[in-house]
Picture: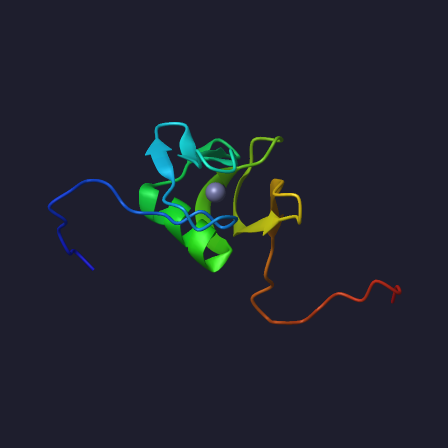
Amino acid sequence: MTEKNTENTIEIKCPVCGDEMFLNKGGAFCDQCEIKIWRRVAKKEMTDEELRQLVEKGKVFLKGLISKAGKEFEAYLVLSVSEDGEVDTHFEFSKKDGKKKSVFGD
Ligand SMILES: [Zn+2]
């Protein structure tokens, strides 16, 4: 996976309107519907490629995240877009053993 691009820019299609998003240091932005996806999350700066995965696949696996308590963690960052075009992100943790914890107690 060491393909070299002639350009440094990655095209990211807006999840709301499908237009090409504008990328800068702050994140990915759409001029059409004015959504913003911030590059910085849990003290980590996502790469362009990570931003693209987040937008195109709806989630991206991130390592090197730092919690508010200062602990390093890894998680999926999941993107959701509401009907009125509000963009929201949240973390999703996957258990390696695949077991789901019951919410009904033990
Ligand atoms: Zn858009």
